[in-house]
Length: 138
Image (cartoon, rainbow, N blue to C red; front, side):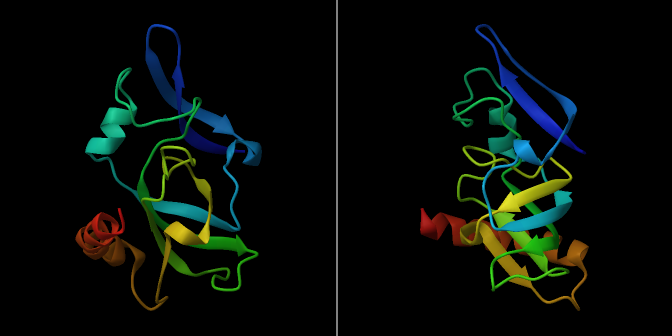
């Protein structure tokens, strides 16, 4: 069990709260990441609005980008202990996002960074770069 912000939609409103969830709440993925840093941006705030238009299926765990450490992987490109950043690729929209302690990722939205770099530093430095990268892909 781990903590996650879960967004639910009823006929008249959207609600969100921190809940205890298990791995069955995670989307499909081949890399399990311990989330260390996440951010709240405009798209995340829209996800919490009734007519925000971001989340496609409820309930959903929002958070469109985050940094973390690989816990386990069945993908040859990533191994336990790797520093990674995740952004875009429908994370927090159709695929559970970074507002949780653990996250299952697909390779497509996962960026690998050297272990010798501090994860916190990478998180701050990478945000503008990842935004540019994401804009060119979409």
